[in-house]
Length: 320
Image 1 (cartoon, rainbow, N blue to C red):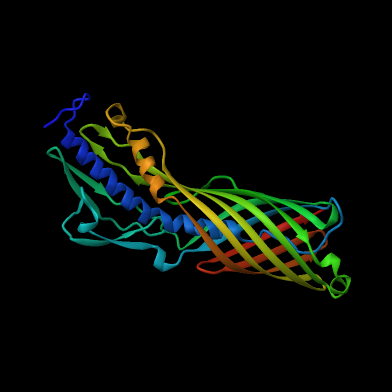
Image 2 (image 1 turned 180 degrees about the horizontal axis):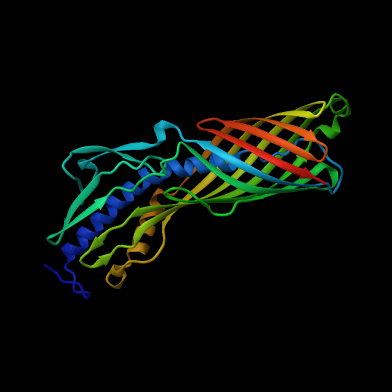
């Protein structure tokens, strides 16, 4: 057998390559449901109101977002034929949690140069509803435009972390149709950008060459939204409906502390290069229904966004 300069045989490095290929396969099945869900969480409740406000009116709000995890996205099936290095311990197939799943436990085993590698499959968040808070700020600009920004701190999940931030620009349309405004109908269009970062514990793999350093994986999502919103005022209540179209670019990386094996092989760089092969873009279309009720300068707002998933949002706002 040929021996590399680092002292490892080409066969050993080939086996490590198979191991990393299996990790790539598993990472896509495990993480993609969560990044798809993140897009829905970031799409909701951007339009505070389609109504044109007085110039330089400022609005500040605290919102809570609740994403309902569908059962179909909590698990996926694996079988021994899916892997080149690992096998499922004592089974030929198994149902395992996605990042949105529970804490069911299975083990994968493989042999690396006579050493058994035994790996527990990663847990999911084990939450039927994922809730995170975020802050909203909006400023009414000239000509019926409004700048909106939103920001959440890094929210701890049971098995990971989530963060979203973004900004958008809304333009009122109904101001050009005075008869509509007289009847308390309001229309607006809004373009938004959001960045979602969702991170989970992943594969903690120890070998005779050291830890592989892929025990944390992140999904990074850049999303561009276009929203068409309409509302009707009834006394202090404003009823809103919207259609949202978004385009998301997904990127996946392993992060965290590098493993001891880095002195032999740059595993994080290798697996991140492999993860580039599953990067993708997706388009979603959502509907949204919202209600906003006024108490003097205080407003209560709640909304439901729906499509492939269902997402609820509730907020309290202060309008200067």
